[in-house]
Image (cartoon, rainbow, N blue to C red):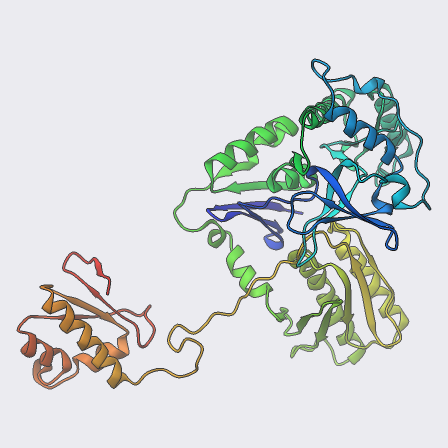
Length: 519
């Protein structure tokens, strides 16, 4: 698979488009003032305990208090509380040695929130979900710091290897390496990307993450809640960290600073890939050059058209998302069942893409075209699971119900991406009506009179071609036309120029230097 990352920096923030085989599959927008991102660490102050929900509300500086449920506390919550207090009040030069930290007993899974957070203490928390709509951020105390090949989890000594590494020999090899190089009081999860990597590469990744934990410890010293303790990397580098593999063949960036940061980051994590990063400065917008804008216009909105003529209707409600599959005008065969299968297969691929592209979360109900054969239903489920394999969000696909509906659940991490692809008609401003050409003529003459009275000369009037014909048409040499009438009335020559890019009632005045005169 061919993967490309197109990064568009604007004053409002950074837009990141992920293309797979030239097709847009993910679109991320990192706002310039975005203060809460998944993975950020905060020193929070417990404000309210809700025993009925077995949860707490924590002040992390957002307008609404953040939500922390007991199940997100982590078994090592008491160790985390102790570490937070110790780090805040630490006076040791260079900070205390975390390797000598005495870990507290684990909390029980069926415990109560007020048993652990009694006294409303300060606590180190990690953003699990960004603020969505009127809800504050969702928090977790299961602190984890992800690297390129490993993830570290403080307060335990467990080593786990990704189940996606299928070779048992490779899993054992990685387990032995990590157990040998792992510092005390850190658990390590070995990521799929570590497959085939040597000890030096894993050790370097692990050392960087331990240094990050040391930074957290240093930032806690003297901190006053609520306070940001550590920012997750930018969206660009976190995507590169999670996605970069041999399939990537192009990263294009239109901002010199982000280009330099990305290049140095890739130099550090994958030096052999340094040549795939390029700086774009060709004048035209970067998203237009790589067909991202066109794909966004085609992919967002209520209706999504498929190549066969079939189309999807995507509706959103508070509780779930509903997708309806409608058959197209092109028949693959005369067999109705076969037609339904072919259309459903095509729709399944596009639905998997739409879920990633719009970042839809929660429950998604898909109404596929009815099929009678159980074999065909099984093929469709297998195809949907296969198409969603590249989706990084946790998800589950349920079998098709007797009503012909497929239910999909997908992890909801942040607000869904909604882009309005409809545009208000510039001519009628959405009313469906435009002013009469006679009135337009009066408006032009009124502006013309104003400009001439203010000593403007050699004026050029640019209008739509139809309006141009109306204003210049007359008898011999245009005698009797509106242009002729204006020249006779104002005693100066007025040039009228046609512009095909204008809408019907649009007009602009220019001086002889071709500079527009703002009215």
